[in-house]
Length: 298
Image 1 (cartoon, rainbow, N blue to C red):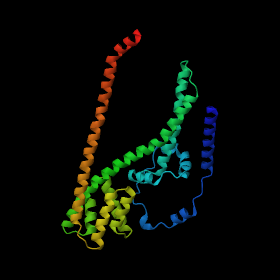
Image 2 (cartoon, rainbow, N blue to C red):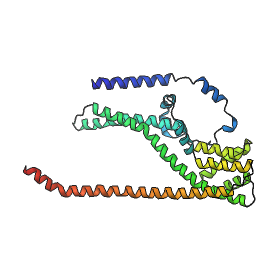
Image 3 (cartoon, one colour):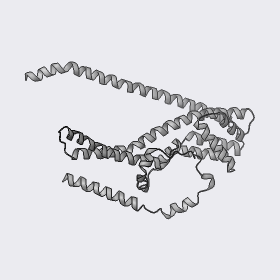
Image 4 (cartoon, one colour):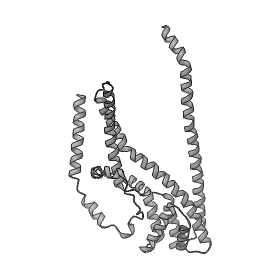
């Protein structure tokens, strides 16, 4: 009964995936109309998208079925924008790893069969399904971790950018000039993203704070959105924002120090785990002869 259920479930999933791939659902009327009314100022400011390598080529057949399921979701799309990767690359990696996880456990029974050891086929089937599920969700975990590290790096650069903007404002520069001059001084991918956003603002005749806000929303960096709000007050209302920028930079530095201390403490706690395992193994090695003697005398 278990074998029949597993075969039926696998056949049903395979037929459903084949139908979705051959006949993808049509987009709704609301989404089609929304796609035709995207304003020019809301075009993505991040354009350096990596198309991927071998995984994107090998897993290309899995892109359409997974995209029909609504993948990747909005959170993953923001993470992909942070890393500069195309959504098709993530979907292709998920498909490749899922298929690899499903097929690789079948090689183990072949090796056992070569040495004369038999193994029921249900065991590699269950292990293969578990590995397929793990391989399907593994790129999501890797994407989330890498995106968080990239956002942390962006926040570090943003703290330096705030100080540069404050210095430019103190030197008598205007808001637009201070934002542009500070972005030209810095180096790295974070300053390159800011320079591209400011260039987009000049070419599209938009305000720089609106473009910076859009960049903060795309990268999911709350500090950049707050910076755009503060700068917009100076640009539209004539408010003096040097003090607020200095306070914001100090708060970001304090937050970075706190995060660094937390990560250091977490690393210290993780280092104690191997020592505990080694100590437990040492105790087991010492106590094994005595326990074996007692059990043998019974």
